[in-house]
Structure formats: C-alpha cells, structure tokens
Image 1 (cartoon, rainbow, N blue to C red):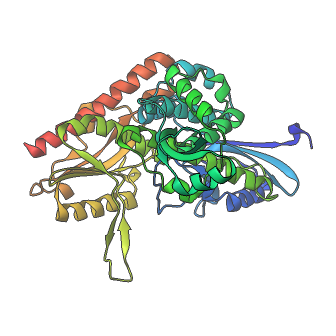
Image 2 (cartoon, helix red, strand yellow):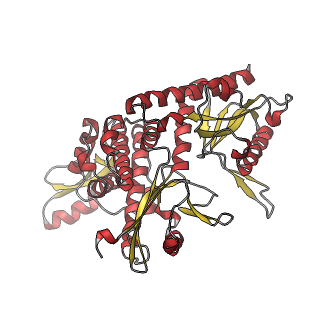
Image 3 (cartoon, one colour):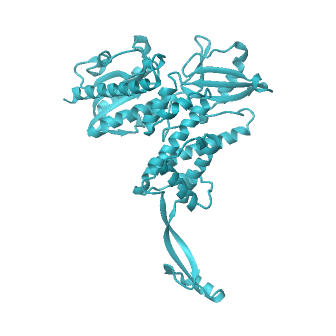
Length: 455
C-alpha cells in the first residue's frame, strides 16, 4: 500500500474529532488498543485515578473527542493504514514554554525551527532531547558519579593489601604476589543507563542535530572513556541506585533516561504485535500543566518558607470504602498549608464551565487539610482563555471557604492568561515576553491572597 493511501485524522487535544462514519470502527479499535503505557511520563511517580484513554466517546451527543494527550500514531485497521495526529490546542509555543519552566531550559532559539515541522511526534521527541541534554549539563557539576571498587593485582610488587590465599596459589604457579587495592571508578549502573538513553536519543529522537553544551559533552566523554561495556540494567538495579550527596544532581537525569529506555522497550514489543504495530507514545498535557504550575509556585514561595510535597492520603483506612485523596499541588509552611488542583481545561469564567466534580473534589481536599493543618488557600488553576486583567481575576477569589466570612481560608479560581496566544498580530518573541508577564501576574495574585490571610 502506498503512503498516499494512508488516511489522516487530525485534531487537537480535548477537541471534537471530525471523522466520517466509515472510519468509526478504526477509531474504536485504535482506542481499545492504545493503552496507558503508550504515554510518556514526566513525573517521577505518575498516578492518576482518571481515565487515560487517548480518545473518549460522548454518548449523549454520539461523538468522539480527543482527551488531554498530544502525539501521533500510525495504525492499521482491516488492512487500511491510518495516521492519527493530536496537536496541542494552545499551540507549540505554550508547550515549549511549559517545558522551559519545568526543566529550567531555554528552547526559544530553537522553536522557530521546530515548529516548521507538522509532525507532532517529531516535535515531542525533539523537546525530549533538549530536556535530556539540559539535565545532563545541569547534573555534571562535580564530574560523573564514581564509587570505590576493589581491584586485584598480580606482580612482583604489592598494590594495597596482600591477598594471602591467592598469593600462595599464584606463587606455586607463577611466582607472583596477589594484592587488592581500591580506586574510584564510574558507577557502572548509572553510566549504562545514561549511555543507553543517549544512543536511543541519537537514533530515534534527533539528538545529533543538537549542539551539546560543553558541560554535557564533557560528561559523555568521561562516561564513554571509562565504561567498557554498556550492559542491560534490570529494574531492580535501577531502583537500588544510591546517590552520594555530591552526585545527587544526576538523579533527575537517570530517572528521565530510564523512562526513555522503557519507552524504547515497549515500542520494540509493539513492533512484534500486529494489532499495535506502529504505535508511538503520547504526552499527557494535564501532567505538563501541573508540573509547570508547581515550578512557578515553588520558585516564588519556597524562599518564603513554603515546602512543596507530593501528597497521597488515605481516608477511612479500615473501611471497605477506603479511598485515597491526591491533590495536585500541596505546599506546607509549619502548620500552614496551601492545596491547589491544576485543571487543564479552558476557562472563560462562565458558571457552567467549572466542572461540578472538580469543584467538589477541591472542597474535599480543603476539608481534609482544614482538619489536619491551618489551611490558608485552596483553589483550582486553569489556562485562562478569556482576556482578563488581574483586577478581574482577583474578583474570583473568595475571602472565606464556602464563601463564609467565618473561614480563614481563601478559595481561588485562577490561572495564567494565555488568551493572546492565538492572536496573529503578535510576534513570536512578543508572545514569549507576554507569557512571562502573565506568569508573574498569576504568582503575584496568589501572593496577595496569601498575605491577606496570614496578616
């Protein structure tokens, strides 16, 4: 079958799927087989009780919608080739800006080249390569991780401690002394994971087209020089890596590298599965939005004594209706707390727009933290798609949980104004400047709300 025979289905995340009835069975088949392991995770411990379907069916309106994932996949159904492309609905600029913030990297000089490609899978892989390179450069502060290893030496001289048993054996045969000594050597587990990820990125992710910073290139040179064999690392070996304080900066890189290796293993397995042949991985935009907000809040609030934690609490532990509550963003400062949920949904500030489930979920979290701490602020955070200045957005902050003046907890519905991203009259560079201004305004509004309650 020729490439021209491939049927292209294009959409954006969280959008109505425009598809003819003759291709519905193909979509149904694809969605059944596109299970969660095709999604690339950027969180160290991804966990979600929500559906991870790439596509969702709206029974009420008899229509298919894309969910919160972006990516691209080629698949077959009844001998027909299909290509499904899901683009970020708020544009690549917003996607790259979030990655810049999360990983403290700068993609602005490269985004113009990247966005010329219409292949979303290419865009995703390119961004992952940028992230990996920056993590490597950031990690290499004190050289590559090394550990003490014991070496054995046979000769007429002694290195370190003499090995009595082996010396007696060698003297009778070779007339040599056997001794053992310790030296620093590159950690083989860490080295193997990094170098395997590097090779995958070169072959599959376009890493060759990226100019490596000197710090990153130096680290790779050291690893290749001192690593004789890039061995396969088991999950057990990976989980049991111990980082010395001086090398703890390598942990984010190793974790990210391990995920890249696992993605490769999964894709190799899928090549042997006729039903899943051609699947590529997808990115969860809700996950990226959450990490982006966490990074912004941490930078501003950490100097003020707030510590961000990964929260996972069990309620009714001894009952059959035991449940876990996992708010997206929790910050603690002594006995004080802030609990927020990141919602990757459009927000125009209509009453019906705020999902009933989201509304009661954050109030459940608020109730829990009100019991166990002095809850200062709770709320929902959105990409704001309607123009609004800070005065208007502050008007959506309630001075009191449930709207009651007796409560010392503020409730906020807020976020970052991205309404300007679709305006063609604004240049790419000006949009980047505006993006950072809107981030600052958001952080300032949260800070004002906190100060009002604390003071």
